Length: 183
Image (tube, rainbow, N blue to C red; front, side, top):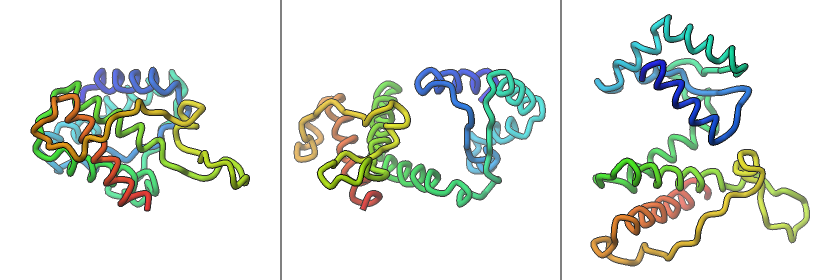
């Protein structure tokens, strides 16, 4: 990723989520050596010029960036655990399916909405109040709502069109993630 590509990614993030004051992330050097494709990314992250330009950019927009130490995902705590779980389930659900960019983007954003709808704690101590506090409350100010879909998990996959197949994968993702992570 070039410096400009990074900035474009950050601009997209801020455009969707609003300007943030602090960003927490892993230290990108943990990608070094993972794959040949990621080798260039590791070299870029060690590049002093890149780090200076990122630091200057963040200083201008007044964002503080905290990185955990390299090769230490345990420093990420729950968010690193949730990322690991989501990646695992997405790999299982997608499998060998070849998705176009828009299909993958749709699946990822819908999976993100599922993850941000997970309950964190009750909003009140009232036993009749069944709405939990979710990450969506912090992102959007309210719980996230999905457009209702037919249950496609019982239909043979070969009978589904591309749109239905994406929804099928999302339903499969939610079913697996709910069973394995939420419980």
